[in-house]
Image 1 (tube, one colour):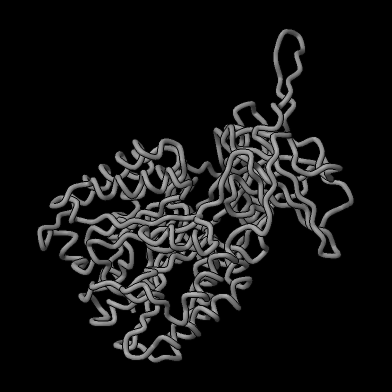
Image 2 (cartoon, rainbow, N blue to C red):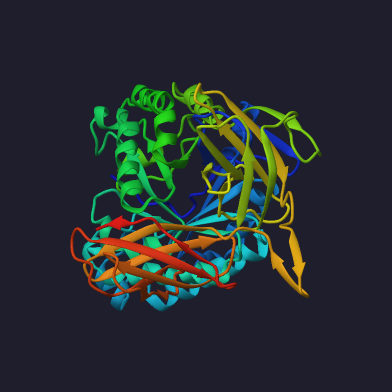
Length: 503
């Protein structure tokens, strides 16, 4: 039940300030967003920005890029992480339209505008993070059954990565009506998956709208199971047209009640479409397109206004502390903290049940306990970022600390005139894909990987090829029930093995 994004649609979300300001987030927190024109409205109500959103489409050819650039600067200056909806084909999308052109749209222009979008975004954001959602809600008009479009989306992701700078994160913007499995190449080339949910009385029942939180849980669980990547709910809206103010209120109350489940399921952020009603009447929902807001156009509040404020407040920190010291926690359980741009490592006292880290207020990432007694993970932590560590114990208690990164430089020792790094070589094997004639794995490490091999049922090692989208893959037969093992070779000759995976 998805609506067409109006030309003037601009959505914005919420950001956690970084630098020397640390925060301990609610366990139930995920990012929340509203439209750009309502950011101050929410701030005045006590809500704090974390993610942002703006729309880009073919209309840039007519109206220019100044509106987009203004939004990006506004979000950058406010400390908001932009989410850019790259909506070129829109409702015109179909296999024939993409392949042969329609309504003034061509594939060559799609690619050219993608490069321009990425280039302009990079010039404004530099290395600061921002997200690009590829062709939101694209699964319609037969495109969901067209395998070729998977490759086209993959190429769009590559264009964004090649031209958008180090801060760009690509999102595959699924609709929510199936055939997700066809788009494995696009997902492999992207950082997140996502979906949109809009509900209105012109198309839906009130019970369907009120149950939006449950549907989000269902879709998120499927995306996580299929792809194991963070999930962005990039456009949520419940229209009040037709006496549905109570429906909108109940729907948001359910999201509030289930925010811990949504966070645990893998939801990274939810963006609410509008705070104010507007005069955009075209689209799938007809007249209901005018009333997505929790405020009427005259500024008066609807029943759901306070619910949205509550939801946004719940997405932010409960307390903050300012410090310029290495760690924000005295008597910390963390010791021997070290790493680099792609490595976080620490020893943790008192045998925690789990240890996690996050960078600049992003999603928590689990560390694994290594054979040498430290907890570690390979994840990007740029120089100058703030890395927070969190240890959880059997009784449910937690300990946390924050560090300006890198907290330490891996030491070196010299022997016989040569320099050898003392950092231990360790590898993460993830996003494993095993098909009868296709084997694929994503390999990350704090050390440069020069070779990846695989073997089936303990047989001979087979070299994998590093693909343009960053994963290692090769075509060879893996019968059902087989065990597959991977090994990675580092530039210094060290070798690390994965566990076994069963097809």
